[in-house]
Each structure stands twice: as C-alpha cells, then as structure tokens.
Image (tube, rainbow, N blue to C red; front, side, top):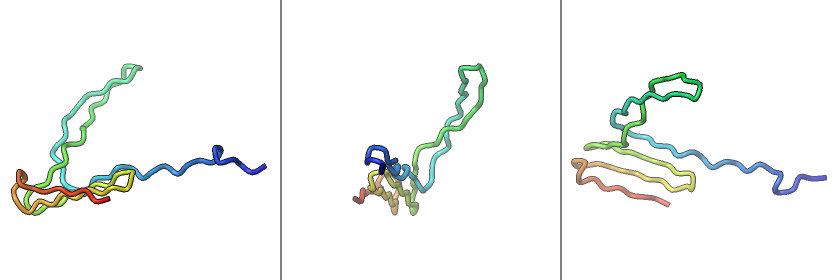
Length: 81
C-alpha cells in the first residue's frame, strides 16, 4: 500500500540566517535540572555601520538587506519578497 500524504515527511523550511556584523553578546550562566552549570555568550544585536551591509533570510522566503552608507541613525532598510 503506498504511503498517504499524511505519512510523508515534509521538508522543513530553511532556517533564519543573518550575515553581517553583530555587537558583542552578553554572558549568561545556564543551569540544567541536574544542577550542572555552563557559561554561554548570547548573540549580540545585529549592527551595521557606515559602509557595512547586513542581510537576513527568513523561512518564508523574505530577504532583508540593510545598507548603511551614512551613520547608523540614518541607515535605510529594505525587505524584499
């Protein structure tokens, strides 16, 4: 008997991906329920400065590009579908 459509595994969407500069991340200590602790560094905020570009790709296919030809406060961002 051939598998039904419900039995077939769906292909997961591509993950969110960001390419570009980031600020430094904050250090945090996490503890498991077994009592073991580990220090990790969180990802910093996405950050572009004069002349830099940041790009993001989302699972739904949208792409985000941030070009910064001027100081950060005057940067423009665009979402491409």
